[in-house]
Image 1 (cartoon, helix red, strand yellow):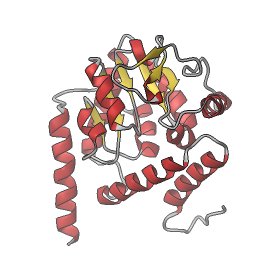
Image 2: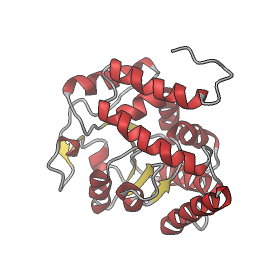
Image 3: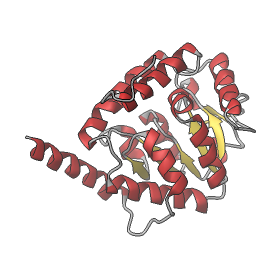
Image 4: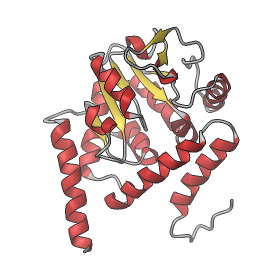
Length: 236
């Protein structure tokens, strides 16, 4: 779909088109389109920009990953469709492994996502041959690799489902998420919650200097909710 430069919703429409294209390529699930729509609604509340609170969380996330012994970035269909090149660059910056992990898991989708990431410069991507399982998750999303997510001390799980984020936290891992919904279980289970659109957050994390000075995730989420509330008051 050709979107004119002058279209006021051009960036949003381009993002949606990437997901639709992802579905057609067998990378993104149809349910992923619904998940994106829910997140986009929260992005409206933020003003469709990276707010200072989110930038602080992004800095803290970068520091946590750089300080980790075995940092891993979990990749699902939406992440692969929206930021394939930047997520690979981020893994390089953070010396992190990439592992594909899906809620709607099929071997074909796993293979297609790995091939898609390789096409964008990725290598040694985990997830195709799981040999471990996250305790407490009976669903296929619990499948993982010993080398990657299972043994990781810090895991970045963008656009994640709450059950897995909670399970990873119970494994005493530092869990980082990128989630536009500050009310989600994932946002509240994580140690560092970046309330930002992934298409802004990942490029930001490529450039920001690491810092976790005074970062507290409960305060972080409270500040985001306060920001949204005050913005809505102003608009009203």
